[in-house]
Image (cartoon, rainbow, N blue to C red):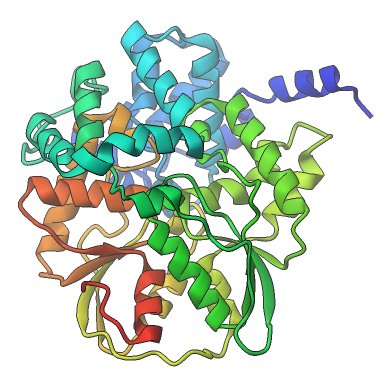
Length: 452
């Protein structure tokens, strides 16, 4: 057994993008029409194929990790639509994550850029710090969002080529943060889920729920609905009190040491849970937790433990569909519903049919499919905060496609997508209610209309 210092060294040496994974790319170009930034700008180095070429050039010392190189990777959403499109099975997720970790360790960002990223990583992955940061929103939330929409880069501006500086600077990022300010209420900020909720009637499965960070503080109703529906369908639901952030946001941002530290804590917490499944209702969190084995692949002290926890992780829609027969009767909910595929659910986890099956199981729901349904809305972890201009363009593009269908409501399975689409819709004059699919299932079970 390697001692701790040797283990840390082993992990450190695995941070470069894998040459073996890079060489799987045959540069066929199938990824190009699926890549959001290539759609916006039409530049080869802002496509997955181009970025993989840059990764290889850096490994072979033909490209320096300097500003021009870094900008192409900062502009990448990490949405993984290229993974779905790739006929060669290129695993882009570990490539972009390793590249971003390499950048953060070897590239000195500007003072404003470094400060903004440090603030995000110091606050967002820690629920208690997030609670304090959200307190002003209790009083000023609507005003903050209105000011943000007016001050931020206007989503109505059509793309005119790649911005010279895709991050837009500290001020533009602050304005984007205002426009994207999450909903806040005293109830959501202080909400606590029961430590254990018994199954209704005969217990079919024991599950533990990841409460999330933004999810638990801004979308407490999603967690409440998740617990109620799982219990109604025969699951005992535990919510471990000691759990924390899953590490998804730091991982996407290249802060891989923080991501591993957070993941280790959650691995220990969920190891102690005597459950069959670990249920996640946020797409980005589920994708990150399913990758724990990969995150610790070079660490013999944690690799097997990480794989064991990852093997239990399921999106809530997967758990409900896998249970089979529906126990709780569904009552009608008459509505035209656009379902938006969260990228890390559809592309990252390959979960597409299950959320749609849940929605189609609700009498009265007409499920609508917008154009470019596979293209990212621009949320992508912290992307809409650190890359506000392209994020705004993608958000506007998504909203226009949704508006063409005249929906009554939108359903999506990720808090980031909810905030992004809501902000883009406000900037274009729309105000659709946006729900997690599990909220609509819960409303159907209880015979209520979530819009009221």
